[in-house]
Image (cartoon, rainbow, N blue to C red; front, side, top):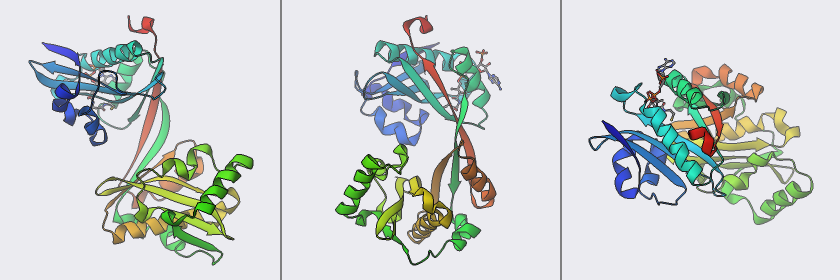
Length: 297
Ligand SMILES: CC(C)(COP(=O)(O)OP(=O)(O)OC[C@H]1O[C@@H](n2cnc3c(N)ncnc32)[C@H](O)[C@@H]1OP(=O)(O)O)[C@@H](O)C(=O)NCCC(=O)NCCS
């Protein structure tokens, strides 16, 4: 017989392998009223499942970070109970909605989608393409094609952005915005990998960037890129990526990962075209639930 328990930092470490490496450190610092919430399932004291969520800083939204049940215990209702209990904790903490984003194409994806439907989550919708590559990307034709840009463009390490340039971008964004909100580079600078993060100057103005993060010792995430709209047909965005991939190879960091929103059909087509130079291409989907007391009764 198994039992469910809201975990704290003293009980949660035994569940570490049941979530993604990125979230494992959170289990060591769980606080009763902290932003991370963990519910564990155990059988005779042995962990058999974990549901993990994060409450946003304003306290009303939440995201299910992971849901896991040991393979030999699946399809017996434990996943459903874990999610239901997690939702209840989120309601008790004042959350009014929860989201989940998950990778598709896994053997248990149909079970997860059935479980979400059963628990009255919204029908899942496609969100992102997740592309991964290694050194083979260096052989992609585009990478050779955009090796050199016209002399009016200069690529520079993002950490060499001057204070004046930073202020100019901020002011332009206030008076005459030209950067999509989520791609403003300053939002992504924390923990940036300086080796592979670059800016682009054109006619003495900063007109583009690629900001990257080293998410694991062997993996660089290409997090945020943008080039001013009128210059996008010049291939300079690809030149930024080419530069970063080459620099990454020289530094012997083997893996690269990046995402493409599925509604950007041109970018999705580009990734499909370069599929041979990727190690994998997967999709994520997302679902949402409005949480209220009644939904969990
Ligand atoms: C997804 C996961 C958490 C589900 O846990 P679980 O304990 O098996 O879930 P439950 O038993 O409560 O519910 C699964 C439901 O899917 C159903 N199911 C199983 N395989 C199915 C399939 N191929 N198609 C449709 N439904 C399926 C089960 O019958 C069950 O429904 P029921 O209760 O109506 O009979 C588990 O499979 C898992 O840990 N997967 C790996 C991690 C993962 O991918 N997590 C999700 C995102 S982080």
